[in-house]
Length: 120
Image 1 (tube, rainbow, N blue to C red):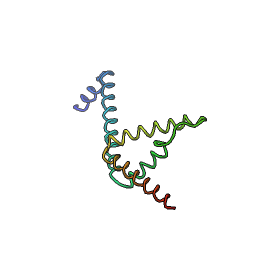
Image 2: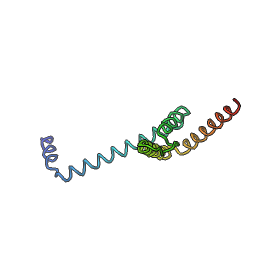
Image 3: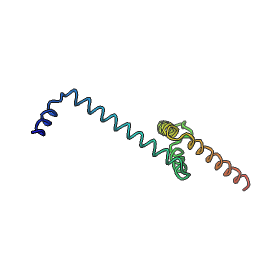
């Protein structure tokens, strides 16, 4: 008999209450998903390999490249740069110190490459 009463109570919940419950559940899931993503990104940035891969992706997305080209590629380049900048924002939120470390590592690598090419 108790289960019948529980079922009657569930069926009597208003549509407004159900919508509110669904919205709360949806927001909580999105927040949890964002927290997990940020934590995973932060852990990834703590590894040298993770920073190498992230920098490669940002470089391929033209973060440090030129946007302007005298043809329709300007739209593609602008979109890629916007995407890369959004990812940098996420990276900085997840692990700002690791992002700075990434920049230092890349600067050292670029400097070493430039010095090596001058020797040749």
